[in-house]
Length: 204
Image 1 (cartoon, rainbow, N blue to C red):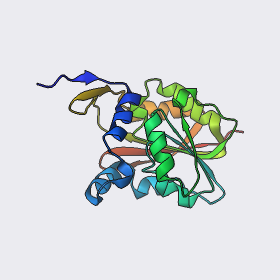
Image 2: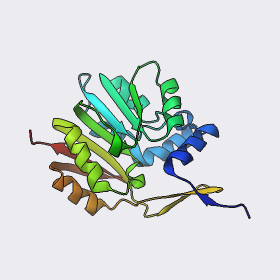
Image 3: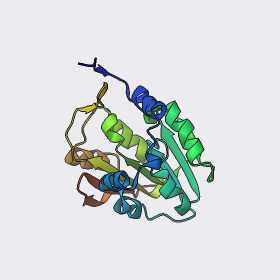
Image 4: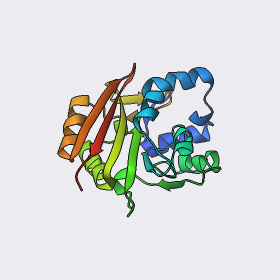
């Protein structure tokens, strides 16, 4: 039996890029499968205008960013994996987005965003309340936070020869964290694999 070892999130996603696993180029069947977490319902929930600025937490190689960029004027993507950011720069070069390699909790900027989005990333974040408070801080007044969280309660991502520790998302806890952070819940939509939660910053 192969030796199965736990890897950090950064190392796992770096290895995916090294293994030529780039979701931007998923086949049609796999793309439809991923849409069960963050398909058109997720994109529509952003209600983007060309004048909007968007921050994506966990941009990866640009799978979701490539759908957002034609809809908005300014895009920033943050990801903990250096190799994912390198690949995203290549995949998204036609749009010249701002791409930053950083743990979101360590990410620093003076910018405020009209929309912050994240899908399949909070499952890697242990300190979820702290992350959501940071989202609130980075949102402009009336800014929207569009979050897709997995319904699956797995605590380990098993990728055959390696495993990654996960921190499952609990919808009710996430809703509570959003309210504590001063974000008003606008909607909670359910897909086959996820909850898509939209909240709005109404305070100035």
